Picture 1 (cartoon, rainbow, N blue to C red):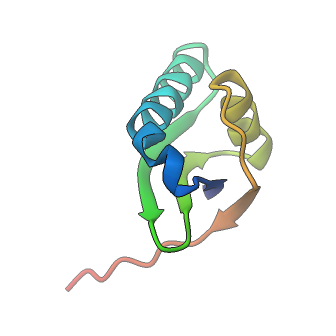
Picture 2: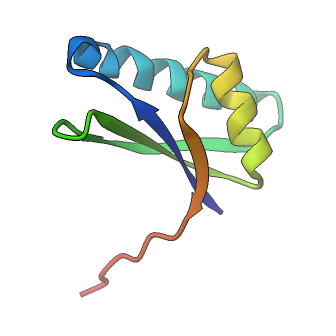
Length: 88
């Protein structure tokens, strides 16, 4: 299952995106190493909306929330998502 963490990032904090992504990736890798499968997939930043989405693969929403807690990432919401890729 895939999940999106929605983060509010005002224009004054845009420079923190790479560091936030690194913390998320590292926390997910640490959890995987300890046997809890959480995998960071990618991030999407919408500058006009001051919103960033961090996308993960995990077996439950709770595991993604735990990863965010370990990475000290405050988020607005956590939602399950479906990604449709065009195979053409």
